[in-house]
Length: 65
Image (cartoon, rainbow, N blue to C red; front, top):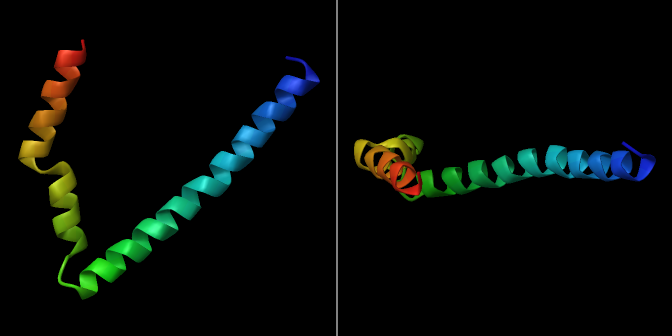
C-alpha cells in the first residue's frame, strides 16, 4: 500500500469514527423526543425486530440468493 492509499484509509476511518457516535446521538435524541409523545424504545425495538419484520427480512435474504 502506498502513502496515498494509507492516507485515504485514514480519512475513511476518521469519518467512520466520527459518524457512528454522531448518528447514535441523533437516534437517541429522536427516541427521547418520541417517548415524550407516548412512543417507547421497547416499541421501537419490537417494530425493528418483531416476528413479522424478522420473517420479512429472512424471506428477502432468501429471494436475493
